Length: 57
Image (cartoon, rainbow, N blue to C red):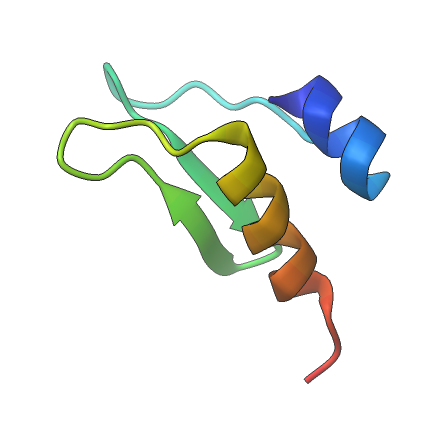
């Protein structure tokens, strides 16, 4: 996922250890994407969520 974010968005992602099976994407202090109902988000949906979160408000 980090490589996909670097390639698609140009950001360097930092991997942090979490709980077993945890998958959460944060941008600054904003929750951007996470695993829901036991399903990991697709790489494409994570990239789109990060892009949307990076847009100025």
